[in-house]
Image (cartoon, rainbow, N blue to C red; front, side, top):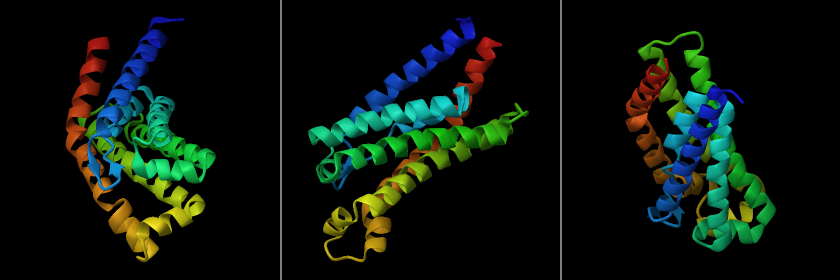
Length: 200
């Protein structure tokens, strides 16, 4: 195994550890029954630096931690989904994490392909940082509508379902997660360029 592959594996493993720690800490930051996801930042870093596959791996690690919280009841809303159907809960939770990392990596690669300028890197990271929470929230909402409509209707307590999803279930959480990612985008670009320069 060559040196670059070892560096890649170590880098992804370190980011995976950061994902786990941040997600465990995120369990303490709640709006209603749902926690704010802080782990999308290291997922975007991994997706941009190591590629879409790495982003998907890190997203899967994020999904596994979330699923464990659903199983043990740490995530109250997630536990209700788990009780309704453990397998479909696993599918939605792992799927949203893996796809958010994969899509962030694909967006970054598409924007920066064959260009190594600071401007391209910034735009690539910014779009990847926007993509991750959009996909994460979008897959979650789609999964809830497809597989857990009855649970959603219980949570909505008579409110119109679409309005509840947009303004109750995901609205504030999504905006906070999106804001955090956008604010930290310049720092992500700086980290990526500094590491690449040190390896040049």
